[in-house]
Each structure stands twice: as structure tokens, then as C-alpha cells.
Amino acid sequence: MDISTIDLTRLSLPLRLALFASVALATHLLVVVVRHYASALLSRNSPRRYQKLRSVATLTTSAIVFSLYFFAVGLILREFGVSLTAYLASASVAGLAIGFGSQGVVQDVVTGLTLIFSDLVDVDDLVEIAGQTGFVKAITMRFVELENALAATVFIPNRTINNIVSYPRGYVRCVVDIALIGDQPARQDIQDYAVELMRTTYEQFPGISLAEPSLEGRFALHGGKEILRLKFRIWPDRGGPIETNFAQELLAVLQSKNADYQAWMITVGYEIEVRKARRKDMWPWRAVTPALERRN
Image 1 (cartoon, helix red, strand yellow):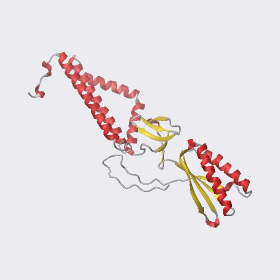
Image 2 (tube, rainbow, N blue to C red):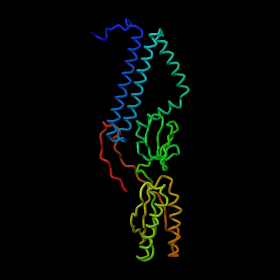
Image 3 (cartoon, one colour):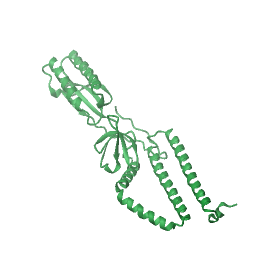
Image 4 (cartoon, rainbow, N blue to C red):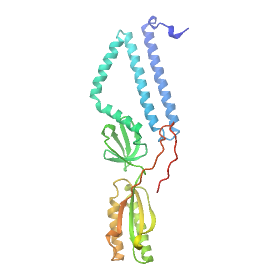
């Protein structure tokens, strides 16, 4: 028997309603199974690589499920004598009214789609958005989720995003240059104390650092000058303790050992790195290009 030739109008009303309910339930179960296995498949790969695909798949699935339920309700109401045309018309009017009352939500969705497809922000990027700084944990249709320096999750509505500051290295590099003066033993004493104070500062202010600071070494400058370079890897806008506590304490100790040591001999700066070419691997079908090496 060809199922397409069955005349549903010959069935009793309870049987027809049961049939529609069974189709809706089967559709819902099928969607649940598809979502479960798709999530399991994507979770075995890099979440960063498939984040955009997951967001688009979720949006598409939700739209399909809504359409199925919407038309299923319409077909059921038709069995109670409600015109399908009137149902669609009333739904359009209701949707228009809801649209006017939820313009912010629509704007969130449009901006979220722009973020997903434009590659402006990726999961695990360190960014500053709407005055909030943190690592991107998720990009959804309505929010960008950040984890800040206090390990708190910040939800930023997409419609409030006016500009994005991205830190491609994953931290800000605060560089401290210390002038070395005197004979070699005196210079070694400056280095030993500076390194010790660097480690103490790292332990005293753990909230500003994203990685352990490092001794970059000695560098000879023109004119016979020599500097010692230290590098701190910190959160954006968290260099205050280095500019004040670290630099001032180091200056006080060095001046106590040598009255000729001046404040200008200790400089605190921030390195700027040109953003390297990055792999466009957020979509599985994109070609993968070799990643360029980055400086430390």
C-alpha cells in the first residue's frame, strides 16, 4: 500500500490527532538524537576549530524544529475547523508585533551572525569588548561570553559591541629595561637583585600575570651602554604594580648602593607585535596553511 495515497480525512479525529502527535514526537526525538551525536562528534575535535560550525548548526536546527512544530500545530488546529490561512496570517501579525517589541534580540542575532562569519573573534582569544577584558569562551546568537582576570564569566549582549580590541599573543608584554653601570661585579649585583625582585613581584601580584616573567638577558647598546631586560606577561591594563611597586623598589635599592643611579635608568614599556597570519581553520573545508612562528 502506498502511504501517500491514504486519505487522512477518513480517519477519526482522535486517531488523526494521535497521528500528528506521533509525528511531532518522532521529529523531536530525531532532533535530540542528531544534536547528541553531532555534539559528540564535534567534541572529539578541537572546539576552537568547530566553534563557528557548531553555532550555525545550532541556529539552523532550532529554525527547522520551530518550523516543524509551527506547521504541526497548524495542521492540528485545522482539524478543529481553524483555517490554515487564517492561522498563518495571525502568526504573521503576532510575529510582527513581537518583532517590534524585541528589536534588541534581533540586533543581537544579526551581530552574533556577523561575529561568527567574519572571523573577528575566535574562542580562546584575549579581547577587550565593551570595557570588559577576558578570554572568549563562547560566541552565541545573543551573547559573547568572556572569562576575566577574576575567573568570572561576563555575558556581553551582542548589540552592545561597538569595537573589539584583540590581543593575538594572549597577553600583554611589559618590558622592563634596567641600565647596568659600574664594573662587572656591580652589574651582576644589579642583575641578581632585579631578577629576585621580578620573582617576588610575580608572587606578590598573581592577578596581573598570565604567565611567569622571564629574564631576556643583557643587551649592549650604542655608546658602550648595557641594559638588562626583563619581560612580564600580564593582563591588559594591569601594568600598574610593575610601573610603581617594582620600578620604585628597584630604584630605591640601586640608589642605596650607588648614588649615581637615576630614575630614568629604569624604563617600563610595552611591546607591540604585528599580528601574524593565522590559519583559517574554523571551517573544516577551508585549506590549512602553515602557521608562522611567533616571537616569545
